[in-house]
Image 1 (cartoon, protein in one colour):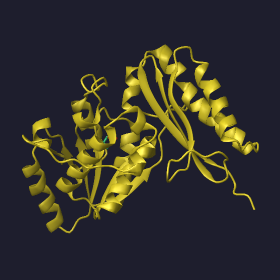
Image 2: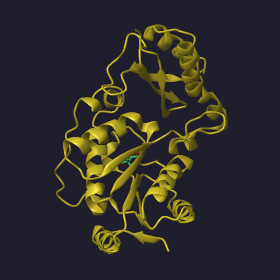
Image 3: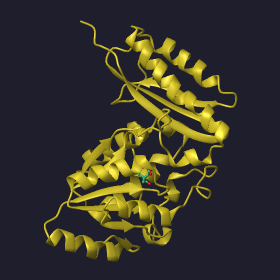
Length: 286
Ligand code: PAF
């Protein structure tokens, strides 16, 4: 039976019982509006752990003042049904006051991994993400926590935090789940009109092109990024936040594709901001 939990005290009681039984705990933090991408994380946790906990909390501190916090899709009843079908043991859906109690005034200061790309476009975003993830990890105390590679930089920031702050939880990063036509699954896809949903395929097409160019021997990052931009800009209302070819660990821009390179994009289509990425596998010379 799946338990719906709203308070930290109740969650701790439930976790203590699981621990006394000697079961391992897998944790999937989410903001709800669940799709196959989230469910793939839940299934990975289900396969590896005795008890699976999923949180559903739209975290206000990771949204900027002009972002979509108030309109972010909230589909709790449907989410709970999907999670029950995946065999989740506990769903933690706290209120804002339960997570950020009166007087909350402590934040995780994130470092270099949080500076470029999303960090530049969304100031303060990763401070909010890291703080809430650390709080949730302290509440659940899981053996493993599961994140999606679609939010590549988020996963990197969280891995860094877990290593730097000696968190006992293993951070697992699972592959991007795509629609059959290539669009990366995202809760924000549901903002798109059917026509914009079609135009949004330019993100995937630009990543496919980047891969093809690398396979054909192109190594110049500027050339590849320019060709990716052309594909994206073929969608009439596409507004590019960034098209970046960077080192997958440091996120520093690369000039030549000489080893695994992260191609990362953020693009607004019809005012919906979408992100996507893939690793380009350039061969090392020599
Ligand atoms: O990826 C998300 O949905 C959120 O950033 C997370 C990790 C649940 C923190 O609010």
